[in-house]
Length: 338
Image (cartoon, one colour):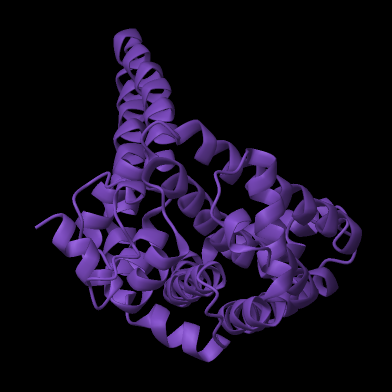
């Protein structure tokens, strides 16, 4: 990485991506190991499931050789519908396992990114252990954020269902108005909570405090955050679609029924997961540098002793970090706010 002065500076959107790539390249072995540990088990599970259903697809093709590929695809879809419970159970297990491993993995990657900024690089196993220490907070925050997002989605969906059943123009209007309002609120909300993981890992906050702190850090920077995360997500979708077209062709079921298709679909995630975690940490650090004057000394202290809390929106440029009358940076910080 670059010199300390360049690391702790406010970054433009282009510089955020450049810095994220630099961090990824500098700690490539750590990030790719963590990403593989998180995603490979899910990929193997998905490949086994895909092989199971893929065999069924082969049997359908042998039983009806006269059918076109489109007709065979419809037969496969009908098979999945007839076994809805089993399919739902399999995908639910996959979602749960993937979510749990991703929480730990993303926490570990945020920690690895923060350690790079603090000039205290650690191995992937140490980062994984440090990330796992915050599992409950990560899980709790994820449940709260996800519950609010999906709760709003469910409410809008119920409005559309009720409007369709009653054939009411007024309810239809409310449903469309609710959908637009929900979309705007969703962008605002996601931009506000996108920095929860860095807050939890670096500042050791609980779920609710992490959400409040994420809102506080993102204030006035929501467009900055949303644009960065959105661009990375779009790039990932484009790459995933290109790989799908190259290896799976026009078969829409290949990504979930073909072991090779499933593995190919995980390749973009293998890169996207660490880059997404790094990007959030870079955004979080850049905003705190600009708003609070975050320095390497403060970051190092927070990572070692994250129980030190300062008033909201503390500007570290107004706090002496080199007070020779104090034994530690922590004592200097606390005494200035006593």
